[in-house]
Length: 423
Image 1 (cartoon, rainbow, N blue to C red):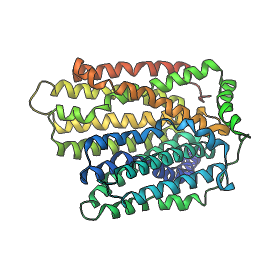
Image 2: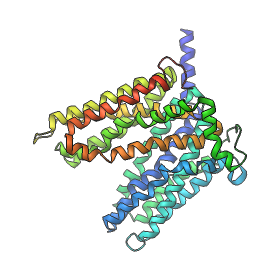
Image 3: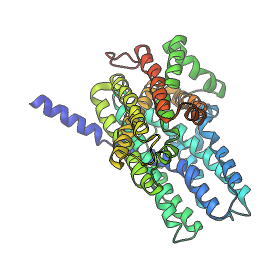
Image 4: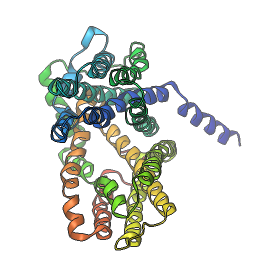
C-alpha cells in the first residue's frame, strides 16, 4: 500500500506541477490568435458588409501556420533582447499578437479592408512564430516522461481558448462596438504576456552558432541520431497517422445538415459535444501517457480514433436516404466518441513529435514535423467533397477508416508497442 501511495503522490506532483501550469497558460496564448484569424475577423468583416469574395481571400493570411518551418531556424539561432532565445522570442511574438488584435477594430472594415488584411497577416505571422518558440520551450522544460501530459494540457488549453474569439467576442459584438470587442479580446493575451517576462530560460544545449548551422544542423542532427531511413519513416508516419480522422471531420457541418439536423441542433449539440470531448480526451490522454508511455498510447489511442470513425458511418447509414434526422442522442454519442478519440490520438501524436525532436534544435525540427503533418491533410481534405459526391456519406466514412490503417501499421516501425521510448 505504501508503494502505491507513493506512486499516487508522484503522479499528483507531476500533474499539478508548475511546468504543467505553464503548459496550460502557453497553450491558451498559442491557440487564441488562431481563432481570431479563423473566426472573429471574418465575422467582423461580414457584419460590416464586406463582400464574401474579399473575406474568402483572408484565408490566405493563415499561410504562415503551414510554412512556419521556413523561419524556425531564426528562432533557434537568434536571441532577441539578449534575455534568452526562448523567453525573448515568446515576449516579442506576444507583443505583436496583442498589438495586432488590439488595433484591428480601429479601422473601417468596409473602406480599409486592405489595411485589416495586412494586420491579419502580421497577426498570423506573429502567432505562428509564437507557436514555433512555445513548442520548443515546452520540449525543453519537460522531461521525456512528462511530454504526454504537458502536450495534452497544452492542446486542451489551446482548444479551450477558442471560446473567447469564437464565443464570447461574438456575443459581445451584439451589445458593444467592434472596437471594444477587439480591445477586450486582446486583453486576454495580457496575463500570458506578463507571465512571459517571468519565465525561466531553459538551459541551451549546443545552441546554433550561426544561421547556416541553424538551418543545416537540425536535419543533420536528426539523420545522425536516427538515420535517414528512420527520418523517412517518421515523416511518412506524420503524414498518415491522423489522415483518416482528419478527412472524416473535414465536412462535418455539411454532413450534419445533409442528415437533416437544424442549425440550432448543430450549434448546441454538435459543436459543444465536439470541443469539450476533444478537451477532455486530451487531458485524460495525458494522464494515461504518464502511466503507459507515448508508444503504447499511440497504439491504444490510434485504434480508438480509427474505430470511432465508424460512428459517422452508422449515422450516415441511419440518416442517408431518409427525410427524418437520426436521433439527437445518436448524434451526440457519435460526436462524443469521435472527438474523444481524436483528442486522445492528437495528444499522443503531438507528444510523439515532441519526443522525436532534439532539445538543441527543437524549434526547427518541431516546426518542420508539424508543418509536414498539415500538408497531406490539406490536400486530401480538399478532395473530400468530390469523394462524398461519388461514394455517398456512408462509403466515404468507410474509406476514411481504411485510410487510417497505414498510420497504425507504421507504428510497428516508428513506435513498437513494447518499447519504452520513441527514440
